Image 1: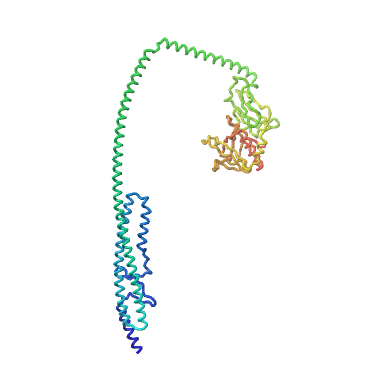
Image 2: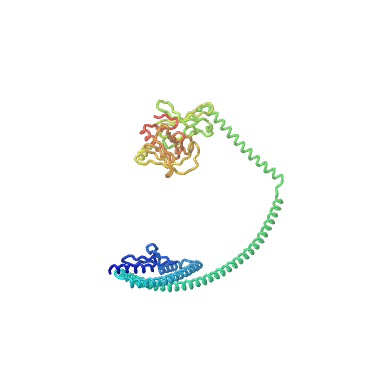
Length: 488
């Protein structure tokens, strides 16, 4: 009997299951939560993405519109409203489609319930309990669908309200845009009228000014003609021209006479001085560092030595002379290497050699200043580069001449122009090219092929820089001298 009931149950269950779609599955414990999509396709909720509720979309777009309302122009606002209206129309259509889909779901649920009722009447035992559980799940799903339909109806009403609001706002925006367009056209017409008035006034002014200019030109022409007539009436005669020429000749003759007398005096003085040529010249300037020695004639009208060969010497102990390379001008600025020595200048005048000498050895008064500078960590001087590799330097900007214990560096701001360690190829001495600024200038040969002529702010800084550099070079067993000098 049990087997008969079991067999009849399986047969009824198979017959009932044949009435249900093959896509339906009854896993134990719960009813399947499938959704019917377009064209009666079953959609798995786990695979489908969660759709954003229509209410949230509407609220978000409304907030964006309200936020941008204050900073949008009338035309942009109109376009936004039209876009919002089209969006609301799309949302309304989507709501209609969802409503139709919900009706289809209700019909499907009703059919499914009828099938489950039929199945319940045909099965018994545990299968009957499963059928009742499936019926309860279907009823719960029907209740959820009913609630969802209510929400859809409410959202539909909200969308209609929003669509009406957007439609009214679009109309208002269109009206405002038309009013603004009309106002703009009126302003343009007013501006055109004002421009026409200004153009007419400018034309009147130009015509009036051109007429006045013509009158002024005619008056000037009349004045020029009158001036020419008066000039022709008062023109000097030929006799007056001859008198003026005679007066100019007398003035010229007097000037030439004075020049001849002066030349005679100079010739007589030169003849007198040639008899005793040793006292023709002398050195002007003090015998100290920072001064500038200059060869000058003892009396006015002395011979000109600008083009005469000149050579400066420093007198070493024992009376021997050391040639100062490059010192061939009538001026020379003593440098620290000359301290304690006599300076001589040899002038070749015609065939005679004239020698002038300082009264005493060159004195140094910079010991305290140099000692104070040596106590600093960084010894720097502001200089201006006047020449580079024997050519004039175009820029007159201020550079920094840094003297270190191991090297000398020349920089401009953060840019380093030259940086060389003390070596036998490095030369540093005072400028020997003459000129008014020779007492403040130095010649620096950083290495072979790179030379600078630097102008310091004062002669004291120039001489102190040379002394400090030579002391640091001496500590490195390097004799820092000038070109052609003998290191001692």
